[in-house]
Length: 403
Image (cartoon, rainbow, N blue to C red; front, side, top):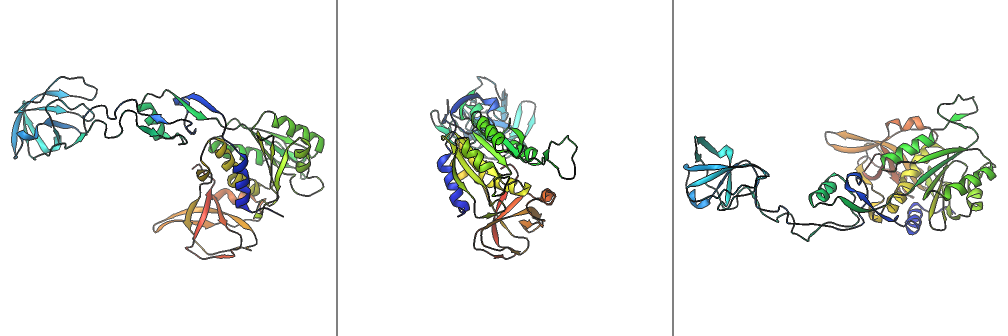
């Protein structure tokens, strides 16, 4: 009996462990998952600093406005100036510059006027105005990034700010794709009426690359059990995740289940209560290689990839389970009706309207209709047992775009 979608995912997450930890240069770490806490090596900011261009002053000197003080110099960001603000004086200061001793406020330049070395202030400041206080962001020794965070632009910047030239991250799984079917030809080859060009291989590689998994290789394999078994056995030896397309159902030439078993893998389940993608197979080999047998139709392939395979890859990359299956909650643009006997995934596009963002289901001629998905941003997930959804009803949307 087919397993339900949630149980299928749970089984994958039970089997899929994070890859080994590896140190890499920060410059190459974008998109990786941290395998260590990042500690502040000093206070941030390391001293009191000006938050804007203006003048550093003593608030005791400006109890009323307007009032004029003598400017004794300037301090720019990066300056090691030893200027000190004493009674009756001020210092011109620029954003990010260290606050000079004696000053306890910065008045922005827009609230002043200057003639020669005399600066007139047209506002009365309060102590601490426009000052970034030493350590207000973090103190030396604070944990500023937690193990398990994904290194995006902000996180990379934070690592750089504390001098982390090398970071420890979880490795990324190696992926191999085997596309089965004697009817398949490469993109560059001519095709007879009974043949098709392999769209699944390039499509899968593109999706994986957009998700951060590069260096993926794929091969076409004919419908021959011995050859397929050998190719599966070879792939198991060099990759962490093996994706097969086609040959996974119950037809005469569907050799994937047999080949996977003959190669020494253990089938965890074969068949999921979902549409499209019902025949999908998941197997493991000694706990080190995860095998996904996807149906051959292009929309089934993309759906299974985003619902199961990419979440598995994210988990193996060290990402917490609760963050491995990101879904958007969006209102339906139009009513939607399905059969309701199993979980259904409907291709859809996101629409940005003046009254908000919504998701609109698209028509297709079945799971082989790749052209129908040109306008799609992903799939609406309709849980088992639901047959009708009203316009405006909130639904789970699984994006095919990077998240």
